[in-house]
Length: 109
Length: 115
Image (cartoon, rainbow over all chains, first blue to last red; front, side):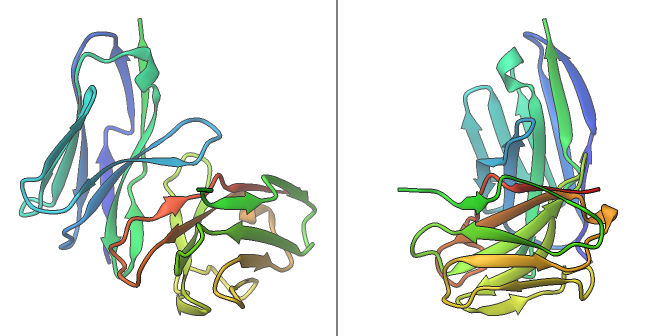
């Protein structure tokens, strides 16, 4: 059974500092997604990582994928308040998305 | 073009009642997915349609849950004899093509509250 685990589950960030969220998954998959969810809203797709070593960047967020280690990271550079949200990673398994528990980020001045 | 839409946005019902939740996928998308998101959790897969047929319904929790997509477009998730534990946000997503790797686009969700 494919399982996806994120850590940390909660992250209180200071503005201007750097942080990393980790996403581990239990069985082979070559496609991983990162989503953002604001309170009461649906999922906004951030990144799709397709192959080992893939790295994608958008603004202050950078995601990478290591399929051999079954690990993806979401790196936040110089956190700002606008990044406060819950972030999910999800892996494709047997035709469906398997989500992690989510990481709730809060950026404090 | 329009994204995935879901109605109603909120539904409050009493324990034991029947509810229907509707999903309108992106036009032309052949694949449609239902997920359930409980408070503080990630979405969990319920059922996946490819065209009119349910390709995978392994995530439906029990026989009180049923979904249809009769014309290969709009889908309805039906819950009979609702229980308080059914309270959650029900998300619908659609994707193009037949590959399970095609990106899924999510709707805004229906928040179901069972009193």
